[in-house]
Length: 161
Image: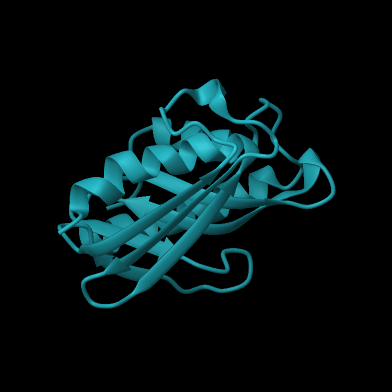
């Protein structure tokens, strides 16, 4: 089961790396790595990928943005790839009613979902505990805040027990 994802997933990958529209120099290698994990997810779960989320780090300017971790979502499962650029491992867990507690913190960010509501100084932090006691913490800054806000609305809140 190869390439079981919507074509707009590739566009979402590009959006994470280039909110301004210009992908960084390392984008091609990273895109292939993301596709590899997405394909692995589809083969293991048998599910079609519905969404992705990436935590990005900006080091020394827009052309050196790196992906810190990757989330892949289907209707039934979530895959979390931590230390994306260093390790070939991931966690896979159920996406259904598995979140037992949730904490969201904002700083200089309007959580109303308006894509234009962020500033470079904006921060959005998500912490949640799964029912099997896995603690997940993620932070977004600046233009990545709307992506994390979308993840919270579409995937985290619906799965709160």
